[in-house]
Length: 273
DNA sequence: ATACCGACCTGTCAGC
DNA sequence: TGCTGACAGGTCGGTA
Image: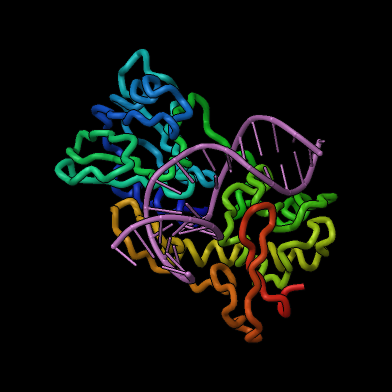
């Protein structure tokens, strides 16, 4: 699934292509799993709305909806999309074949369609009336002092803290591993036991890896497709993620894979302390 | 209050 | 070929 850089890339792609377009009608599939708001409410809110500002908030795509001259129009309505593990939002021509696991199709005034596709259905769709806020801090906006405070007194492994969306919104499994690798910190270290100097390295590493990945258009492994439906995103070189048994790029020691609270963690036992 | 752990789903891939 | 099991970018809610 898409982590922060991929969601950022998708949000930018959508913003570029559909900002200003108007949703004329909405079709929602039978499967209700991806819906956090009732289907009726989603359809009613989207239909007739203009797609205004489109941006990333944590791992969510937030789309401001405008309704000119409609009295019943909800003020500040937003359409919130979370892609889960395998979700994608594509801009399709109306004659383009509807792929399997398509859960929502929004017909646009321009003749195109916005489609939400999600095989595993871990993604979520909802509409909200107030400005949507991610539960935690934006990794690319937080300053170092606040970042360091997030980990104080936490006994949980540093990696679990990075993945905790209530602390930081947007960091996922790949970039948590990659940031820890760049910072030379083992994923299992207790968060509270990571020194201030190490946290500084982690902060810098996280900013760096996220910026690099955004610049590269997100890391693509399997299901990742951009908002145009094109595959083949340029991928930044992962130093540890998915490289179990392969040599560390620095010291050649085979990369280890362990499980931390049910998720894979990859690291170099020699370079990361 | 925190922190693990399984559950939620489908698809893919390696190994037999 | 086909079967089986492990694993996948994420979050929840229940339980300890």
